[in-house]
Image 1: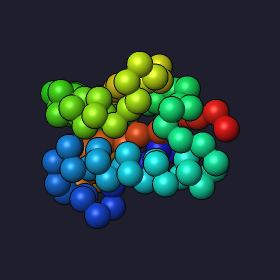
Image 2 (image 1 turned 135 degrees about the horizontal axis):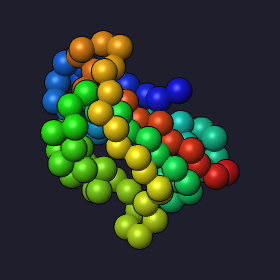
Image 3 (image 1 turned 90 degrees about the vertical axis):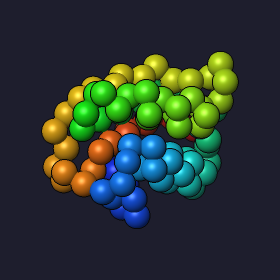
Image 4 (image 1 turned 90 degrees about the horizontal axis):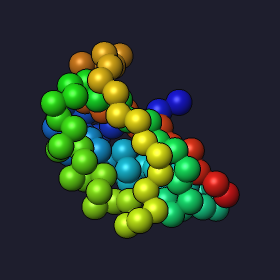
Length: 92
């Protein structure tokens, strides 16, 4: 399942992206891995026109030259306060 923002729900895509990526870092660490081991990512945006805003945060977060294969899709998310949902797959 993908992750959505809790603390920044209702805020912009950048804030929600930062929160989600922080949560992903914590989950990866708990699993004994990190973002340098990402294999795949799927990003669902409520509004695809916010992709540049999301990309700025994403690009600052991924390890340069080690970004995973990524799909970014516009989708109606379950809660209008959620602007983005992210799911990743990583190697251990």
